[in-house]
Image (cartoon, rainbow, N blue to C red; front, side, top):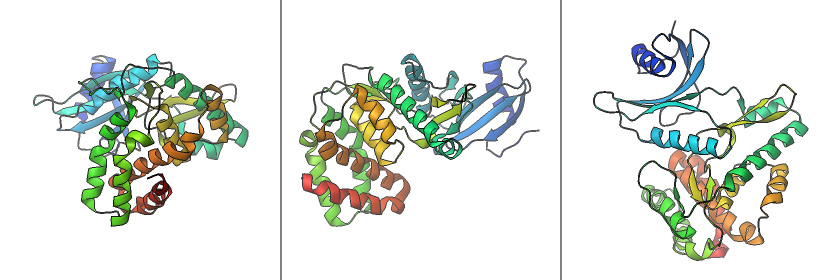
Length: 311
């Protein structure tokens, strides 16, 4: 019998399954999965035991799934473990469900792994993550830009692209009026000075852009060795790799074991720690303030105070 409660018919799910697994495939059950802030995320189990993950939005034209399918393919092409995409669809009037159907990867997120494994094994996960991100960041492009199936603005300079990414976020934070006037004034100065604060001469590098604990799947292999088995929910861009590292540090996704291993490939210069990291982390917190409200107000204000001496 079906399990789970969503506003999607069994027949719709059966049709999606048969498009992937063949006309004789039979859906046995579906179970909601955690995540999917902007969609319904389900684990689909067939009667023959095969499983897949479905992210679906009813009655909406949602092109994000096409981008997610592309980005998962790009990650796999770069040698990064990521779910294989079986199908995706952008909703239409005749077929009003947007979705992406992908491989079910067996694993637990980074929080669960830390609770389950020894400190030594957790260091192994961190080193493996560093190796994967070194491999990912070694892929370069001619422009700073989003990885998308539609036309994306291309930037020759990193600060210009970064401002383009965060302009709408900062405008929305201003409009909501969550920050005190003094804080808004400081952030405005930072925003106006990004050309100087984020100046660097590295090439555009492929980044995941949302690596944090719940977007990392890990598992203990047959040999008893823990490792990262998938990066999920990408928001890929060609960007400055340091911005990805700053995000990882902000939310304590990585440990000294990661930082040591990563810097064997790319030594982070003093200007990263002194200038750019505080700026990157400020904008990440502003985005979380926009998305999640007052729980991020105090961290955002604290970060603004850190950045204030830079302007």
